[in-house]
Each structure stands twice: as structure tokens, then as C-alpha cells.
Image (cartoon, rainbow, N blue to C red; front, side):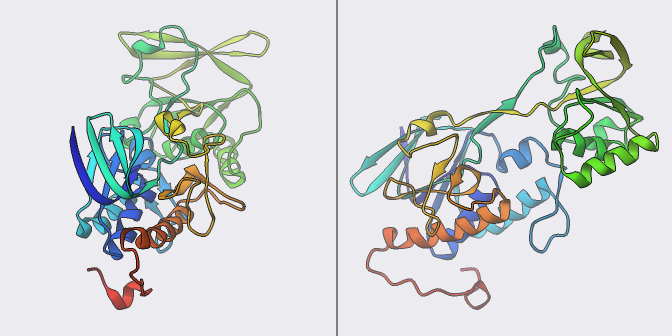
Amino acid sequence: MTQIDTDIAIIGAGPVGLFAVFEAGMLGLKCAVIDALDGPGGQCSALYPEKPIYDIPGYPRIEAQALVDRLMEQAAPFAPVFLLGQQAVALSRDGDRHVVGTSGGMSVSAKAVIVAAGSGAFGPNRPPLQGIEAYEGKSVFYLVRRREDFRGKRVVIAGGGDSAVDWALSLAEVAARVMVVHRRPRFRAAPESERRLNALASSGRIDLVIPYQLHGLDGRDGLLNAVIVQDLDGRERRLEADMLLPFFGLAIDLGPIASFGLGVDKHNIPVDAATCATSVPGIYAIGDIATYAGKLKLILTGFAEAAMAAHAIYPLVHPGQVLHFEYSTTRGVP
């Protein structure tokens, strides 16, 4: 086993974990970042790299992958060590240091650990359609990486949440036809998004197939010809289609993190709102996985938590040294 010695071990390379590298670096603290995915960015990169985000300060609109790229650029001066494609599988104590073991046979020894694992490992909730596996990756997709892949295609989107509605609105601009299958007239999406969806349906740019559910697939060699849907009375309807996007949410699993003794409750780790400290000294949690009274699950909230955790960790790394707070405008980037 190869061991890395650093100041902070960060579990999770999503946007919040990446910003924690910057905040720690501004205090002169070194970081090693562990993530089960092969690249940085978490769900932003893996699930919706082209999805626009509107609530990042200073960016009226920025695509998810572009945000990750900017965060990587911001963290680069502090030379973090990335252990990607490796899951954090063990957490132990060695004197005044914590040791995080990875599935890749590495161990990271650090004075503090920041858990920035979002909602944990994730995978799609697959619809129970016979033979769907043969179509996956060819004409059935659980996420949209490039909108251009759907240009000129007949696309069926199944689901009634934000992902289904948001991608219906987006793909309506490039697809030959977009059909949204949902089992009820009301959607579980943002009101403004639902209003836009209904407006596009009224103008004929989107077909709302309601109330129906997915029932079967018709195609050959992994390529769709049609999606078969069924209403609540068992009546079937055939939707000629090239692509199917089932958006039924993600199956979330914290994996080994749940066994780290951090008091996990409903996929969340309770923390002190002022420092993001968990119940275990030297272990902190930030981002969506952290919870406290009044918590808002927003990326910008996670960014603020990264700063709070870094400042709380400084005296652990440099005991007895006084940290004089400075704005970045006066200090600059070291």
C-alpha cells in the first residue's frame, strides 16, 4: 500500500470538494482528493455536463462542465493530489492523524478529513422493461452528455421531475420531435419550467403523452423503432422513436461512508453549522451530504461551508498559530 501524507483528505471531487481545495490552499493547507469517478466534477460532469446552472454568483448562466473546469483552474495553483477512480472504503485513526483507505490500495494520512461526497454513489433507477439492457448506451440513455447527439432525433422522455422537464425544454430546440410520457397531468418540476413545458405543448413543439406509462420497446440490435406506452386502463399506444430517456431519479448509496461512524441519518451527516464539524473530532462534512438546521442544498451553500471548514481545520494543522483573516483581494493567490 502506498501512503500519501497531507494536511486534508477530501472525499469527493464534485464542485464543493474542488472549492475546498482552493479555500484550504488559500490558508496554506495541502489537500488530497479521493473520488470514485474517473474524473473530477461529480454529478455535474457525470450526469449533466451541458445542463445550465443559474445560481452561481457572477455567472448569470454557466454549464455544469464549464463550472467544473473553472473550479479546477482555481484549485490548480495549490497542486492537489487527485486519487480518481478510487472509492474511500476505510477511515481509521493513527495518533493525531486520520487515515483514509481507498479501493485502489492507497492510503491518505491527514490531520483532517472533509467529506464532500454529495449524495453518495449514484446510478439510474431503471424502468422494468423487458430487454432494455440491449438498448442501453445505443438508444436508451439515463443522462444527456451532449445535446447535439439528439439533433434531428425522435425522443421519448419518461418521467415527471425536474430532469425530465428540463431536458424536454432543452431538447425541443434540437430534436425532430420530443414526446414526454407521464402518468399524471401534474409534474414535480419547478413551476416556471412546467409553465414553459405546457406552452411548448400548446404550440405543438412538444407532445405530452398523459396519462401513460412505459410498457415496452420495439427495435432491433439495440436500436429503437418505437416505445410502447400504456394508460391506466391497459390501452396501448405506439410512439415512433429513435431515443428513450427514462428519468426516474437516481439510486443513491453512501457506500462505506455510512460505516465511518459519523452519525449518518437518511443519507446525511449532521454537522455543526458554524464549522461543519461532525461528531468525530477532525472530520468535517460539507455540501449536500451535510445537514443542520436551516440547511439549503445549493452549490453556493456548499462553497461557503468549504470556507468555514478550512478555517476550522487550520488550528488542527498549525496548533498554537494565530490565523489572521485576510480577504483574497489583499492577500492574492499564494
